[in-house]
Length: 200
Image (tube, rainbow, N blue to C red; front, side, top):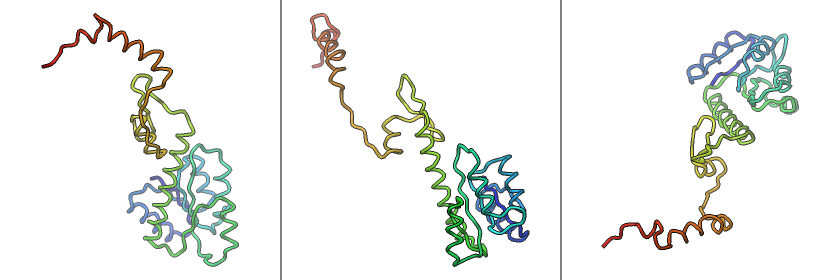
């Protein structure tokens, strides 16, 4: 996943970048909030990790700008903070649009846990957005083309994304109008059914 990080302390920034890259992520690094915002404007990322206190533009201001941007995809934001225990500050940050917090100094395991949560939420967000948009259904096979998963049966799609198991039946109106006349025709002398080979 591509992650934008904003951290004004050089050593902390390099450490965070190194750990994220070791975990397999692509990192865009900024030395302050203003630079991070310019980078985000140019290339919006789905995950942002920002320090709280930074020159030019602090973490809260950066979060507000991201939330005010008209984006089609949701951006998950983790705020780095040493302000442990100051609950009123956390509430202010949540009101601004922060999704999660990570205490300094950086803990690799804690970071990994936060990233897993972020990835699950972003994946769910993408699925919801796809469900809210128009799905492509093949007019012939009735298979659904779902983003990142490809073509699948309607039954598979409903089970995997909505938790619904489909059972099969026949619409009574369709049976009376279409199927029943076809069955009767097959039963008539000279019909297709009489021409089928018999066994035994």
